[in-house]
Image: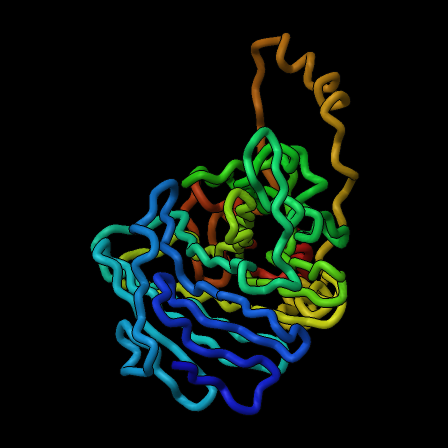
Length: 346
């Protein structure tokens, strides 16, 4: 049964038999393409998850408890996990994008640290975006997708295909610059890093782009090892204490033009990222890094001292606190301090 949002550029319908709160997304820009937006494949806490593919919602509207609820153009649902977290997800079309609001509520008795949520956009039913299969070492893959999948380092876009591990790794993930590496599931982190929490896939003719963005995300990935040929951006919730809720907003875009159109829209919709600074230097070649690090490895003994402007704050900003000795270094990110305010303090 198809139930669509009227009067919107994006046509949204409940995806029957989805195991991840799935929605079918269609756009007049991409006739014939259907994007299977899996709103929640699972919750990840540190290096563990609370079980994948559990969010099985009926194909009809309900009261919002383990079912989609419709309030005008806003759709929402809540899904409780047995481990003490309830996920609240709301979507609302806005022209050629879908507004997203993800709230995670800790209803348990223990604090949860390094919390993320696993979203997914397969391209199997979007022939304008789906990668042609190729065979390498007797294994079929869909790695052409990497050529068209982009993230950004400062203002500079780069494709997954341009990364060190692209040629050999079908489950490639990238960390946001400065973030502690996530080690979960089948993903293999490459050495390259991204800055703005945005991932964008160009169509095969490079004339359209589908993109996913969140105001906070430290991990992006793509699976080209099977015919889902999918990509992901994990909204980041950080630490959630008992009784606390954390909300992260996002957008799903289906746009005319290439990935540069996605970054323009992202800067507009997430103004806290509008003044992102370019990287201080180009990525260092491995040979140059080996030469520079030779003394460090051979000397064997030394002391590493690490400090920055965050030290002056001592884990507190305008009455809000982060855990000193664990998260204080990332106070700007966790407490959403604007760059202009942080620079003035520094």
